Structures are given as C-alpha cells and as structure tokens.
Amino acid sequence: MDWERAKRLVMLRANGPTGICEGCGKWGRPLDPHHRQARGAGGVHGAAADTANDVRNILALCRACHDETEHAQTWDLTEAIGWRVPKFVAEPALVPALIHTVNGYAWHFLTEDVGYLWMDPASPAPVPQASWLRAA
Image 1 (tube, rainbow, N blue to C red):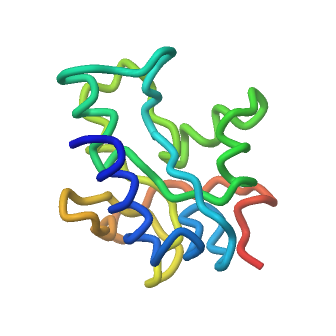
Image 2 (image 1 turned 180 degrees about the vertical axis):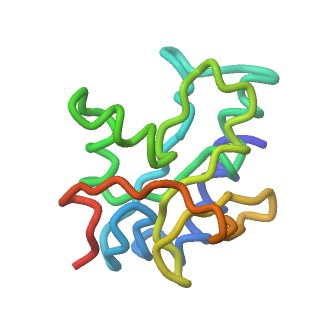
Image 3 (image 1 turned 135 degrees about the vertical axis):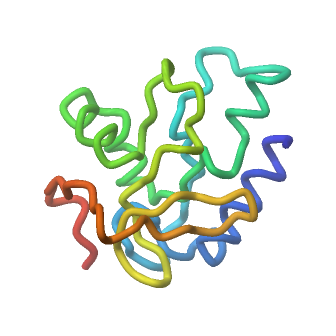
C-alpha cells in the first residue's frame, strides 16, 4: 500500500486527524502516523515498503506520544507495549499493542481492514506503567 493511502486510513481508524490518540487516549490533538517497525533512514521500496506502510504497522499518536517513542529512556517500554517493533521481527503485524481505542484501553492486534482485534483477556500481557500513558 502506498504511504499516503495508509496514512489516511490510519487517521480514519482514529476518528480523524484530531481524533483519539491510540497512545494516551486523549481526543482533539493533531495526530501523527507512527511506524511501529521503523522504515529506516532514507525510506523503503518494494516489499519493505509494503511492510512499512501496512496499516497494522502504523499507529495514530499525538505529538507527545510520538515523541516518547523516540527517546532512549522510553525505548524498552515502547517496545514492551508494542508501539515499537524491532527490525528482527519478520511479521510486525503479529505483535499486539497496548493502545486506546473507542472501545477502551487494552491490548489489541491491528487488522488489515484498519480495525482492531482485542487480545484474549484470558492471557493478558503485562501492563507497563508510565505517567505519559494515562489519559486525562
């Protein structure tokens, strides 16, 4: 999928470009598309672009949450909650993320149809705590 289309679809998933931040759950802030598995310096082409621009690899985050994914001190936490996916993971779409949706805050898989699939609550992943994750 091309980047512009993927970005538009992810913003629709978040209820528009100032919808719900999938990170902190706050409404009404401008949202940035965030690649969970980084594209790498200089962009990507071919199959790598298909993986990078897959809607299951992109979150809609407010600027504050997006910035948190770039700090060395929060790198491990953002990986632990699925906001970042290491390069060695071949299928980033199979990594759930701890995110806010219109249905609440929980572990979800992002789906090909630009939706969410709630992770089975019978086997919940641990929930790391960080002050910037809590919705106001």
